[in-house]
Image 1 (tube, rainbow, N blue to C red):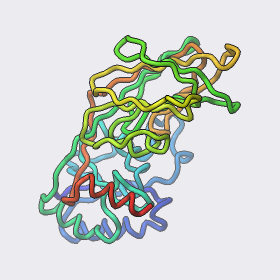
Image 2 (cartoon, rainbow, N blue to C red; image 1 turned 180 degrees about the vertical axis):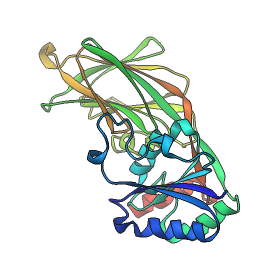
Image 3 (spheres, rainbow, N blue to C red; image 1 turned 120 degrees about the horizontal axis):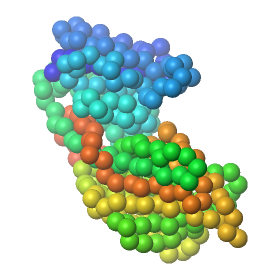
Image 4 (tube, rainbow, N blue to C red; image 1 turned 45 degrees about the vertical axis):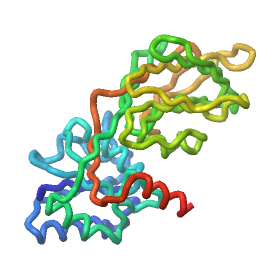
Length: 290
C-alpha cells in the first residue's frame, strides 16, 4: 500500500513532531499522505457529527488510516470512518494501549511493513444501540468499545432491568450498566470487574457498575443476542435521571421508564496488525507493566 491518511491527536503529539516525521518518511518513499490534525471539538462547526475527521475528507483510494494518539483516539477515529471501510493502524502516543499497537520506537519498521504489504487485518465487531425515550425521539448510534447506562446527578443507585432476546434476565441495583464488545472488554468493563475477552470473539459482555449486592457478576452473551437495559426507579420509587453513552462520547439523557436496545451492528471496523505478537502476549505485557 502507498496511499495513507493520518489522523493525529495534537494533544498527544505536541507540535506534530511525530506526525511530521511519519509524513516525511512516507513522502520520501513515493507515497501519498494526507494529514488531519485534531485541534479540539470546540473548533468544529455547530452540528458536527464527528470528532476527528469527516469521512468525506478522506481521499478516494486511501488504503490505510494511521491514527496517532491512544486507544481513545483510535476508537473515535474508527467511529468517524467506519462507513469508508478503510483499515486503521494505531500508533500509541499514550500510556496503556490495546488498540494502538505500534509504539514510537517501532514506527519505521511498521511503516516499512505497510509498504511491503506485510500485515494482517482483524475485523472487530461493533454494537448498535437505540435509545427509546418517553419524551423524545429515539436516538441510534454505534460503539466499538461499549454502550454505558449510568446515573446522573446525586450519588444514589438506580434499578436496571436487563432483558435478553425479549426474556427477563436480571434486575441490578447499581450505579450503571456496561454493555461491551470484546474490544471494549479491556476498557471500562475491565475496571468494573468484567472479564477480558479475546478481541476476535463474537460476544457481548454485560457488567454492572458498583452493584448493591454481593452476588452480581458480569454476564457473557452470544454476539447474536439482543440486550435491553430498562431504566427503573431509585429508592422509594423516585423518578431518576440517567444517561446513555456510546464509547464515552455521544451522551443521551434518559429517565425512569426509558430503555436502550443493544445488538451487534452489521458494520465492522478493520484493524491492521503488523507484529506477530498474540493478544495473550500483549495482555501479559500490559499486566506486567502495571
